[in-house]
Amino acid sequence: MLDLHVHSTASDGTLLPKEIAERGADFSLFALTDHDNTFGIDEFLSASSSAQGIRLAGIELAPLAGEGYIKFHLLGLGIDHRNSELQDFLLFLRRKRNERNEQIISNLQKLGMKITFDDVLAEVTNGEVVARPHIGRALAKLGYVKDISDAFNRFIGDTCEAYASTHRYHPCPAKTIELIHSVGGIAIMAHPKYWTSDLKRLRSGLAELKDKGLDGIEAIYQANTQGETVDHLMIAKSLGLLVTAGSDFHGLNKPMITLGMQVDDDEKFIAPLVERLVKYGSKFVK
Ligand code: AMP
Ligand code: FE
Ligand code: FE
Ligand code: ZN
Image (cartoon, rainbow, N blue to C red; front, top):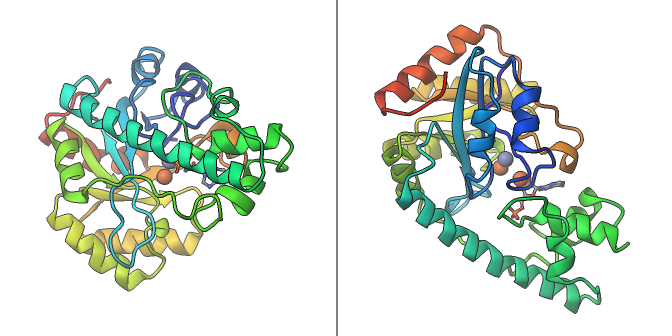
């Protein structure tokens, strides 16, 4: 088992970084990838048992998707999370994110709901990042929705009324990839199907991103259908992109997703990733 896409209480997951480390103690390869911050990394790494496998500092960012594409999420794996340039960039992203959060809350108020920023903050465990699942939880607690999923369906999903005009700031893809490389990490597109479900478009877009330095794609993604995984593996192979596997675990905020991914042969799967990490001078814990 391994997992290269996991969220903790440092962003919109519900388990502490150390709880995640403990649950995956026997994983051969394991990264924590919270949104827009690395506050959980030290706890994750120090709670990881060094005997088993490789442990990576990671992050999930959201660069501009580009014309004709929907959502581009980019994982940085094996990053030096202490780098000050990276931290300055993350702080900027979180400021922008908070401006957007206030806008969403104001939209909800305009729809007649009595919700405040404090109601949302009460749902954030120990993180610095406020994300839509926290808003969803607050709405559920206030009785406006049944659960988080209901909140996304009716009010805060990408195409919903309270969200529509409130897009997040999305940094330039090439610059974001470059930044990840500059701190020793590999840049991997998360859940390619959410970028586009059109395989032709996916292939041509990935070819362009590869020219900008993209290292690989998360072809093995827990919410994929078998067909999607097969398609994405084939595209990765034909473009010479690395392949990673991730669950996108969020604890109780995404109750259907479980921690850990099964691959055929862990060693064989890991080898090309480690090779690239070594090439970039990545710091990782083994
Ligand atoms: P944000 O980063 O604040 O724009 O919020 C997006 C986050 O909401 C993503 O990271 C997902 O983890 C989460 N999310 C999206 N759709 C759903 C859903 N239907 N149920 C629970 N969480 C969701
Ligand atoms: Fe999330
Ligand atoms: Fe994502
Ligand atoms: Zn994620």
